[in-house]
Length: 77
Image (cartoon, rainbow, N blue to C red):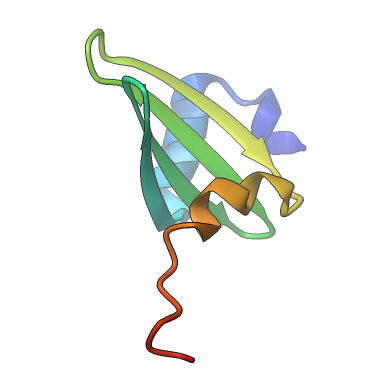
């Protein structure tokens, strides 16, 4: 995936320009933002205490599982 070959600044630029924020979750000291970009997803891991950012991308749906718990289906049923 070409996105993975970009520098962190390049990845951040693509996320800002083309990414659509899908969801946000918290895990320990991290805030994790999920973006959809074209045909893949990018997770931005932001460590609140020391301002460290890590970006991971993926194209399958397996890693969406933690976000599915946040969807409220009560209004649909």
